[in-house]
Image 1: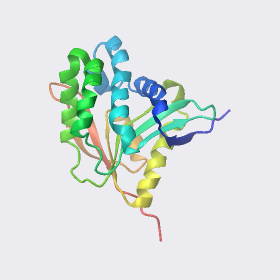
Image 2: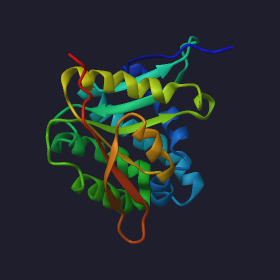
Image 3: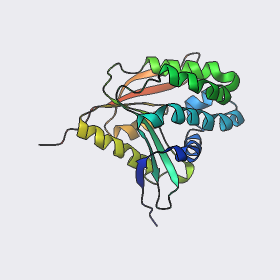
Image 4: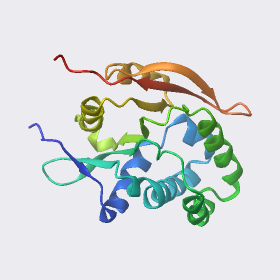
Length: 209
């Protein structure tokens, strides 16, 4: 039996469930595997990393959304940053640091190098929505949660005439994002033999008059 999918803005009480969903979704992600080669450390670190990012950055920007079924269980989440709001403020970076140290431990330098490389490659055009993270739990895969999350924000981007940007950390996902109007604009190579990410940009679709 099909389950309806609904998308809503994330709230503070969603954070524990949200971090579990994203940690599950990104467990085999090439960038996360690069940052935490040890699976047990990755299992512990991922929820901490997403918790820090959501709590100290994404939630305040108003672009964090969750997708849930009729049963109210969150099975997908998207962390969008609004135009001009993708870069963490100095204050946000400072309050995030203790949590990042807990998340990465001795791998903090690797995490910082990845973050810095991705940040340096970010488009300078300030007017765009940035999809920092999108993921579906193992239980939700194939259930339309990712599609619902993308459509929710991209429909608003189209209505407002605003572009969108993301980085795909898996080559296999490029064609998925292309179906939503994103095009590859470049490759981002993580230093010291790290994985490649694909920068993708989407111009808004203008409705016929």
